[in-house]
Length: 148
Image 1 (tube, rainbow, N blue to C red):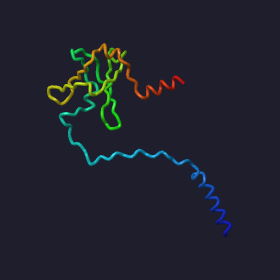
Image 2: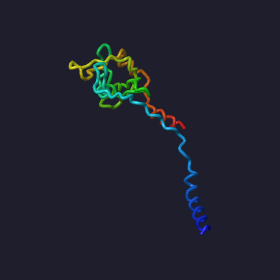
Image 3: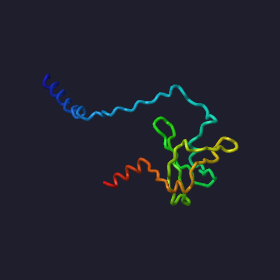
Image 4: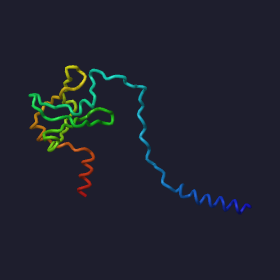
């Protein structure tokens, strides 16, 4: 009887050992940021919706059409660091994306004040055409892999 219990225990141990030998995920999860109980109920007059900014027309100080806002670059703190502008091209063909700092934009609201009418930039279409093209992180990684 004791032999049977020992054999059963040994068999159970042999079944459990592979599970115990598996690597434990040692990567610590990123701690969640506290909301602080803050749940904003409305947009303030000095705030912009990203959905209104993306797609907004971008013009120079002399009202020359430069392009449209294509994307936003946001840091870990939630602040918009850069704005990606699609420059040139026709129907999306031949466009070049160039990033500018968010602080360099002058945003003009519509007459109603609820959406963005246009964005003015202290640069010309020629300036942005000659600027370096913006590369996303995934584009940079793809280029590195292609070079190997």
